[in-house]
Image 1 (tube, rainbow, N blue to C red):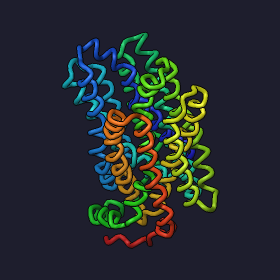
Image 2: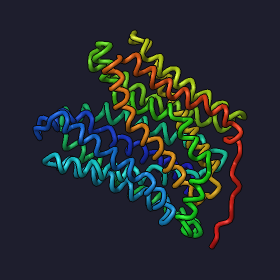
Image 3: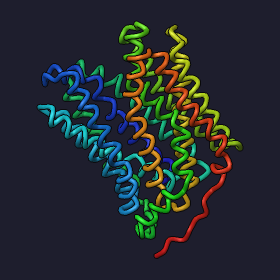
Image 4: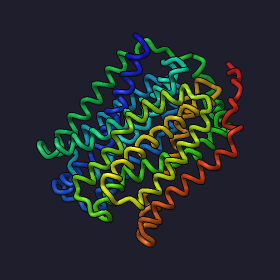
Length: 396
């Protein structure tokens, strides 16, 4: 089966995977009423997902090196789909916490193995384009999850839409197994996994790249989680307009990912493009604090959505190119995502603390300044980023 069909299957799974990240958010009010949960308990449910997601990132990378990217990614979306269905069956806080925790674990097992699959399937000169589609598919699915499940929850309640979303994810797990049946990992990739993982972690650029591109995860986390609240409470926008802005930010990422991935694949000065895009993202993040007109905010969300996906797509492409051991690509990607997720997980807390004590202008400024300083430091590391580690032989 051709690589375009196989890559398409992976990207559709990525979109539904993202849908299952965000589709619980519109139902939280109904869950609270049905199960008589307080606001803090809803926060605990949300946190459970990110605990599983962060803790199992590197597990997914190591597991894929052992059993292969195909089986690991399918296992991940199978766990995610089953957990979403079971979330819809939950009767109390403890069950909700457990099943959202496993939904996060399943998500972690899918991400880096799926990117590793793309690296193995598509021609190398097309990889950046397909990474852009991969990240754009996440935004497309996330936007559909917010809009579509808000509508479905109103019609059917919060449980039935979760059954449907989980069932679609399980169907795609089976479809992935069929479409990717011709994929065969190199048997040598299963040898000396932990030693080779140590070799990857000794590559300085694998540590530096996620820090340089920190603006991407910071902006994605804060706008994805807190912008709607900010627009309602500080800009006094009605909920439907505030939600529309958040959805625009997510949805345009698909266009930005496809376009940015193509450009990154053909441009010559790729490091400059990567650093320049990340710096622009940080500057436009600061600008959020000073824009209050709705139409200007729409334009700003479009720009931020495009730049966010572009910066993360470029990051993953550079990581793949600078990992000498092809059998450890998934581990490299999972480590980079682990670093970014750990930092991103604390950003909402820091952002809200600054906003509480000093105001939202200072919190947006801090967010952008942190991303700007990290991206700017990349200009001093351009020679390191241009260099590609030599591929070493795997000791059998």
